[in-house]
Length: 454
Image (cartoon, rainbow, N blue to C red; front, side, top):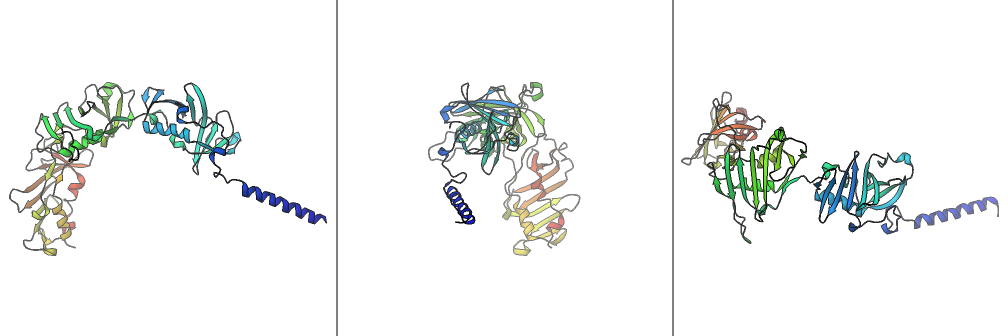
């Protein structure tokens, strides 16, 4: 046998061995987890009770206490249950797959270098695992053990479940309960009076009971039942946007709160929330009356729950059915118009412009007539003086006439609110100045050309 034949045979034999090895070796991620080597033992829920998470050089220490989780350092504060639970479970679920690198120079690439996210797992004071948690890519999270250079690809958890600072771990809930358990709401405003509303206990299989006024220092009839439901619902899961740990009473205004809203539950528990000053346009200081912690909540939350007694009064400014409306007019300095319904006419002849005289855009006229049904304002204005609201010289007067005796809608439109989202509006049949959504007013005070037939 010549040399070439022997050499070819050796190559062939080598290829056979390599092929066998490749065919019988498990692909990455396909071997059962139990067969993989682990740099730390698999931890079950009862094996550990403490997580020390270091992010940005600051360490948060959390302990599991029954079904809850408590931050013990750098502050003593309740941890957000959902976030903490996910963090603890992430440690239970981690599976070590393959070593991606043992080169120290590559640790920064995998984001497992010193100074990154570090998680120490303990049972009491005993350290069970000390992990540098790196980036997540292709559903694998890179992990390195403290003091080791090997970078492991792991599955079963993701970095974001542990990548939080102390603020991220803190429970931001101010009040939390089942909305159906609330039976009484009390509002005590510093200058605008008081109100107490209640609802009966629900009956099995019956309709949800409605809220009713039991005491009020001002007239709140007709009563807006939906307002009470909205307040109870929002307070059932009220969460802060930020903590104001170092804010002083004179800064927050909570030493003399503007408003106090109390929700009482059927089991006897109460949530009494104090409203202080605005920190800025988007945040307001609040706190529970029986706890020292000061929070900041967003503007939209304040608008939903920081109610004055007058806010529980119905805010309907017009309620005319479109079928009964015979005329819609907008009086103003520029482009005034009057739309009138043609008696007995339908289709393209149902409406006409009588001021100025011109054919009307029927679809636009019908739309305008429909806007007056159950039209509600956003809220009652703080200042009820027409002059202050720009109503001494209105920018427009909106009117709708009806074929039903006594049904009428006349609205004076004043200036814009400070946030530019509302207009001051005064109905002719009410003594109150309202704030009405700018978009609602603008859809009626359209340009004359939009009303004309094209």
